[in-house]
Length: 398
Ligand SMILES: CC/C=C\C/C=C\C/C=C\C/C=C\C/C=C\C/C=C/CCC(=O)SCCNC(=O)CCNC(=O)[C@H](O)C(C)(C)COP(=O)(O)OP(=O)(O)OC[C@H]1O[C@@H](n2cnc3c(N)ncnc32)[C@H](O)[C@@H]1OP(=O)(O)O
Ligand SMILES: CCCCCCCCCCCCCCCC(=O)OC[C@@H](O)COP(=O)(O)O
Image 1: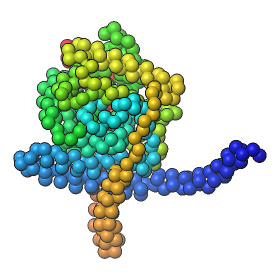
Image 2: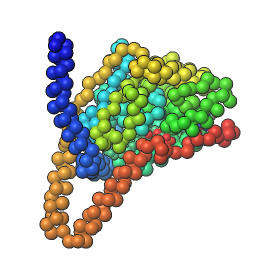
Image 3: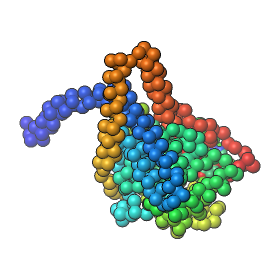
Image 4: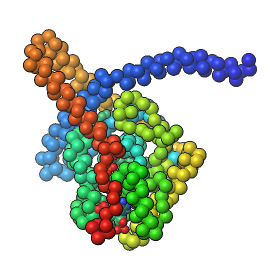
């Protein structure tokens, strides 16, 4: 047996032991009790943090910048738990393809991130990179107004001065502009995420969108919806001088994986690849029509990157991946210790002396909380998505 075969046999044999341990770990991660613990810690710590954020309201009157800095750190305690679930619990790998010369700037400047909106956990992959470059707590997004009402995350975003939109331009044009102008003196570096397609890609929305492309004489896109250009234009206009660049980000997953938040909760490992190009804001036209044309061209380029990825399994350029940091795990461990101890005491108390009524009430409360978290997770599920983009709105309605 030559050395290579010996080596392979060695790997395979220890691999056998290794795969048995992995199988057991995977079985543990798929247990409902684990999901209950993770969601209990997320929900209760999240509501506590929302309450603490509420308590910072008087601070805004004394020092807006101090209140913002406090809220960035409070928000980190929430969003980093989802990053910990992705990085440490599910072990999902996130690989960054980018220009090594741009890499040192990431996290050290304000930026507008333009990303394709094709996956249920694309936002979470975005957060992972925010975490690795130290801008997770201050990360912002142009989010649909409906998300403002999602407990924990939506409420957290209110204190982060996230920009919400109704996806109705006649209303958004003023509110979005005002919200963006409000960020011009933000005291921490932030990334502002813009999903220019405005909704998650589905076959039906893609079909409608390509009809619109045809009516406008624009090239059809294979992997994207036609980008909505007004939001991009108004964002660039109002963050010019605040943001240094646009980070054009194209995300995909290996082996045609269709990742879900429930999959992450079940400890399923995915493999995300993100291709980022840093484009200085000066290169983006100020004129609305030219800016729109620039964005359409950008999405045609993104489409070609996706085509290359589909053919070769990789994006252009070198891999320069930032390492995982331990802080999201440390944060999760802190909140777990803080909250699981009283829960254990409460459960012991309930079993020893809880009356039937108390037990029934507790079970009802836990069931309601579980349904609540399941509804929150449903916010990320594409098949429960909105009707936005499912039909072409006549131009005069825009
Ligand atoms: C180094 C690492 C780099 C990067 C790391 C990656 C990311 C990390 C960064 C940050 C992370 C931060 C947070 C992540 C956490 C959570 C994220 C949360 C996700 C929620 C996000 C959302 O909610 S997405 C939905 C809301 N956002 C948007 O909609 C943005 C895009 N939309 C716009 O900009 C719109 O212009 C608008 C909303 C401002 C207004 O929309 P409206 O529809 O009212 O008007 P429009 O003018 O846009 O639309 C009409 C025009 O569009 C044409 N068109 C195209 N397709 C259609 C169609 N199917 N039906 C109708 N019309 C269509 C139409 O022809 C019109 O064209 P015009 O030429 O007249 O403009
Ligand atoms: C630690 C694990 C805890 C598990 C419970 C977490 C539940 C929190 C989920 C709330 C996440 C909110 C972010 C949703 C992002 C998103 O993708 O929104 C969809 C919109 O873009 C577009 O909507 P649509 O038009 O319907 O496609």
